[in-house]
Length: 316
Image (cartoon, rainbow, N blue to C red):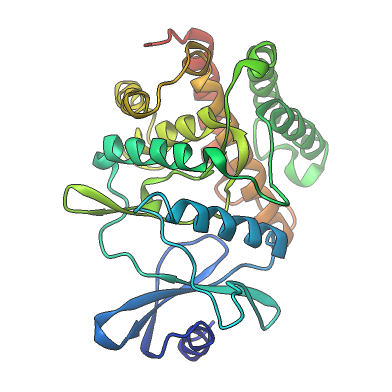
């Protein structure tokens, strides 16, 4: 996408931009900041073609609209004159959002982020999508284990990751989660509560961004995902267990977690990283068969979290 593309898409949603600048980050989406008159700014996004469907974007926008009416940190997508927030442009879906001023990547804002995530879950309690997108942890883990066994059987992938060890770790998580699955509260979750998706302005969270992975599942999956992303000094660092527990407690103070949810938090962290193995391998493998990108990072985390889950003593 070019600057002229971004300005043209913004006009479709009623924004007369004067300049456009590409934003860093994003795995598969193009994001541009469009400056308009009066100091206002917007983000124009063209969604990646590889893993994105209209149904997925429709669900994402429905979640954002519902949450934006109830949680100030969430900002709804703009709509065109016909009330549509999705534009098909050059074979890809596009949308425009308000630009939120602040800093991202602030791992020290974990308690504030946890409280925001809790309020988001509470705000979505009454949300009912016409065509929901969902995945329960038991089904997701079973699906991922089967995919990894298939990849392990392909010569192009077989020696690139410790597939057998990862499959065993997933089987352990399944064994722990399955007997308790019926006792786990469900919610519409953000799906990727990473520090880069929380905008910090001073001593507050000004924005919760990027709902690409929003879906219906156990709410503790979001809590575990936030623990996994915030409680690491960097993307390749080991988990800081004390920081992870502090985040869970901050969430618990705003939306109390059950004992069962606390007991299974390491398994929800494991599920997140197992999914990222598949996501990265799938994305890179489609471009160059056998390419696994940085999936080894998430494989290391799966094995790390398997050890944690087997020794976990709930802090509740």
